[in-house]
Length: 116
Image (cartoon, rainbow, N blue to C red; front, top):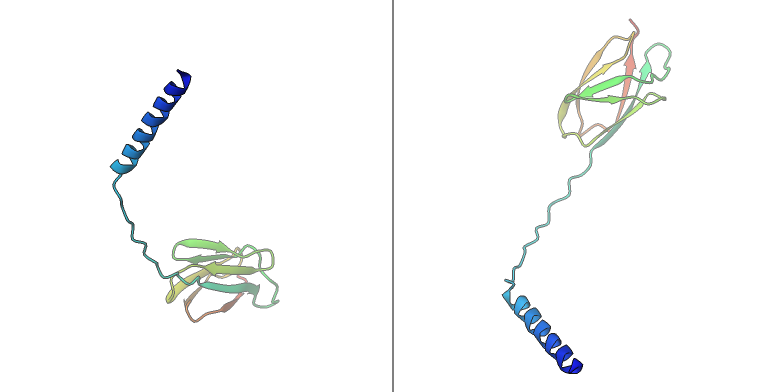
């Protein structure tokens, strides 16, 4: 009796599984490859114009975003639009500078700040 009951349960489960598999619609998905965007990286450093001392904590503003120089006066601009942009460089007790540069042609920027 137990064998018959187990066989009946197995048969019902198999029928339900095959019916469930038949009811699923077959869908295919089209995968598109997108061209990978080349990462734009421009490095630079900010120094005092008279002493050539590196300036830590200078602010570089580009497209409304701010980047700060590290302890050695270095900075990195990543993933910004290629082409001409306006960079504003500022630091306490130094005159602000605005540079118009073409990021797609720039690889390294050297900025000299004059004390006020």
